[in-house]
Amino acid sequence: MGLAGLVRMVFGSGRRIAAAMTALAVFATGAMAAAQGLTDGPERADLVRVRFGGDAQQTRVVIELTRSATARLLDQNGEPRLIVALPGVDAGEGQTGRGVGLVHSYELDQAAGAARLRLALTRPAEVSRRFLLPPGDGVEVYRYVIDLAAPGAPSGRAQERDDPPPVESRREAPPERRVIVIDAGHGGTDPGALGSRVQEREVTLAAALELRRQLEATGRYRVVLTRSTDVLVPHARRVQIAREAGADLFISLHADAGANPQTRGASVYTLSDRGAERAAREALGGGSYGGIELPAGDPSVRRVLLDLTQRATLNRSSVFAGELLDAIGGEAPLLERSHRDDNFAVLLAPDVPAVLLEMGFITNPEDERLLGDSAGRSRLMGAVTRAIDAYFAPDLPGARAAAP
Image (cartoon, rainbow, N blue to C red; front, side):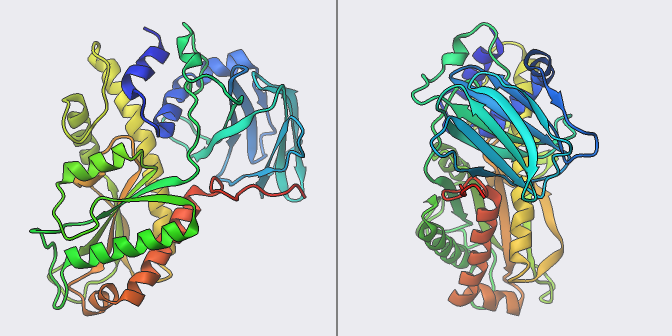
């Protein structure tokens, strides 16, 4: 069985597999470099090189960078081309070369303070996905990935080959709106932490409803709640809801508690190494949290595929955690060590970026007042909304800009 067959068996027909599939593509980077003729850029430039993989139906463009960057897709003026601008990125002396698949050739130069990549296309194509991957999994550079697809490209075409291209082999039409799953912690018979006036289950639900209102008001997101009333939802079911919804992001809202009433501040948790091991045991053992069908056979192959998925997911979770803390810090105090990790059950999905937000200490009078006040919650959830926008930029609807 080839890699494509393993991919199909591991991931089935799930809608959101970008992070896991990108991680799998790292395996084939060396082969793609040899097969597709990479062009190296200047040593001191922010933009290292541009590389391609795929065929005339689906083509991946990977822009390697020495630092993080955002990108804009510029107006194509009806021509079979794609222009990508990376503001603030140094393109060095520029590059030109031949492309692969849907890309006939490319030209890289500097214009208006941005590196500009011009892709001459062999036929009309659409951008099916684009995202930034930080260094990790043995790769030392940032990678801005753009997936191109010919209109009407048949699903699974590349999977039928004996030697699939080193890119995501199954085209998925991107959703118009990102799917955000909001988890209001505790509920029903589980009140959570207790303040002097309010309970954690009450403030988490109120915050979840407010966050849903703000996200839906943008028109950019489809929001799913794990609970919308005061009921108890098992942890495993909360994870299942996220995976069944095809979540692009999972946010679990909580309120902290401590013995010292002076302790206050928000914090964000991502999955710890111990939690990742727990999630792996669940997935490999067919537990209720994993939800990934791994191929039968060699246990080492099963574990490698799972590890790649988890690492990519954890990387994206950490990126969002940073955006979230930056945004919340302008509205509320943060704990001194505000980015933490643990093996919380609601973070165990191996293929959904997830964080647990402790909005403040319900045992602190000031934090309790903030969380119990509708205006205070609105400001706090406004910060969360801004963090979500920042995390998904520049992929949000309306991110395209006219060429200068």
